[in-house]
Image (cartoon, rainbow, N blue to C red; front, side, top):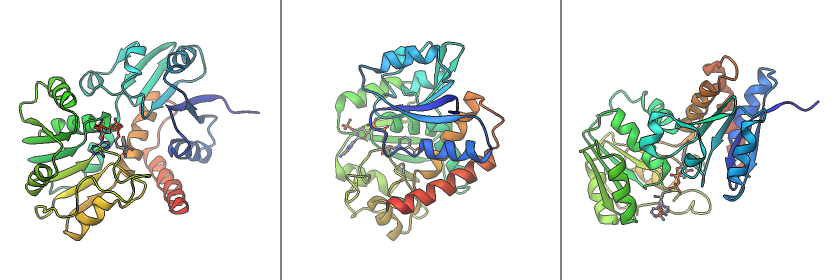
Length: 286
Ligand code: NAP
C-alpha cells in the first residue's frame, strides 16, 4: 500500500533537489508512515496546488526557487520573520489554514554557533534575493555592527533597505567588484547568496580571485553542490575559514520538521541521517 503523502517540496525545477532524499531516508530509518514528495509546478498552477493542499493529507511543504516570495499572498498567516524577510521556505497546513515561516535564517544561525571566535562586527552579503534577506535577518539577530549587501539592481537595494528600515547599520551597495573587494578586506564574514558557483556556473565565482581577507575571516557559500565552490577554493588558499551550504540545508530541514510537528523529531538522528545520504549522493554526482 502507498504511504500517505503528507509532506513535499514546492518549486519549479526540482529534479536535483536533495530534500526528498533527506526526509525520506530519515522516515524510512524510523519506519514512519510519512512520505516527502516533489511538487514541481508553474506559477500558474501554484494557487491551485495551494488550494488543494488545504483539504488534502499534506500537512507541510517546503518552498524553493522561484516561489519563496510568490506564495506569500496565497497564505492565511505569516510568522513574524516572514513579514521582514519577505520569503517563505516552510508552509504548515493546520486544518486548512496555511501559515508561512522562514527557517533558512535559523539554519544559517545554527551553522555559525560553532564559530566561537566570530566577531559580530562586519558582514558582507553578496546578493539580494530571498536567501540574502534571510542572511541579513540572521546578522540582525546576531546584532552585527555593520552589514553590507551588494546587488545589481538599484530597486532591490531600495526595497531591502525599506524592509529593514529598523536596521540603521545596514548598507546596500551597487554590484561593483572593486567595491565588493574593498568591503571584503575588513569583513569578519562574507556570505555568497547568489547562485554563482553552482551548476551551470560552477566554474565561476561572484568575485575574481584577487581579493584580500582579514585573518580568521569566515567565507560562507550558501551553495552546497559543489561542496567547494571557486569562491571557497580561493578563500581557503588565502587562509580563510570556509563553510558551504550543506549544514544550513540540514538545519533548515530540522526546523521545518519542528514546525510540521510530524513526529517527535530526534534532531541528532535526523542530522546524522541527512549527512549520510547527502554525502553519498554528492560524491555520486561529482
Ligand atoms: P534568488 O532569490 O534567485 O536570488 C539570487 C540573488 O543572486 C539575486 O539577488 C540575484 O540578482 C543575484 N545574482 C544572480 N546571478 C548573479 C550574478 N551573476 N552576479 C551578481 N548577482 C547575481 O535565489 P535565493 O533563493 O536567494 O538563493 C541564492 C543561492 O542560495 C542559491 O545558490 C541557492 O541554492 C542558495 N540557497 C541555499 C540554501 C541552503 O540551505 N544552503 C538555502 C537557500 C538558498 P538578480 O536578481 O539581479 O539576478
